[in-house]
Length: 258
Image 1 (spheres, rainbow, N blue to C red):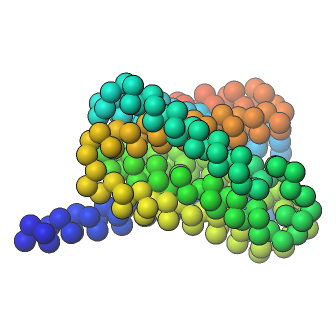
Image 2 (cartoon, rainbow, N blue to C red):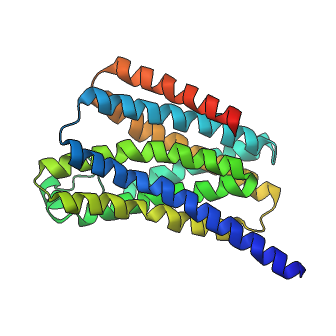
C-alpha cells in the first residue's frame, strides 16, 4: 500500500510538471501564430512585450527561486549554483549555431538557415530544454513555485516566438512551416521537465535548493543576454522600461494569489 501511494504521488508530480511545461512551451508556437495572423507587428509592441517578459523573469529569478533556495541550503552554495547556471547558459549560447530571438549568430549564413529551418529549429529546441528543467526544480520544492516559473517561461516564450517568426516570414518561409517550427521548438520543454522531474523526485532539500539557484542563474542569463538587449534593438526604450515594470508588478500580484 505504501509503495502504491508513493507511485501515485510520483505519477501525479510528473504529469503535472509535464502539463505545466507543455503550456509554457506552447507559448513559442503562440508567438509564431501571432506573427502569421497579424503579419506586421510594430517595433513598439515587440519591445514592450520583451520588456514585460524580462520583468516577469527577473522577479521570479530573485524573489522566488533565489530566496526559496536560501531556505534549503547555504548562501555560498546558492551563489555558486547561481553562477554555474549562468555559465551553463553561456556555454550553450557559445557552442550552438542558432538564432538568438531571430538574429544571426556565430557567423552562420542567415539565408541558409531561413531556407532550411533545420539549424534554427535545433538551436531553439536545445535552448528550451533548461527551461523545462527549471519548471521541475520549482515544482519539486513547491507546486505553486512550479506554476509561477511556468507562467514566467510562458511570457518569455511568446516574444521569443514572435521575434523568431518575423525574420522567417520576411524571408518568404511558408506560414505553415513557421508555425510548425515554433511549435516544435516548444516541445523541448516537456522533455526538459521530464528530465528534471526524474532527477529530483527523491532529492534532498540541499539538492533542490541547488537546483533552484541553478534555475535562477539560467533565467537571469536568458533575460540579460536575450530579452532586454533584443528589446532595445527594436527602439522605444520607454516601452521596454514600462514593460519591465508591468512584468514585475504582474508577478507581484500573481505571487500574492499563489
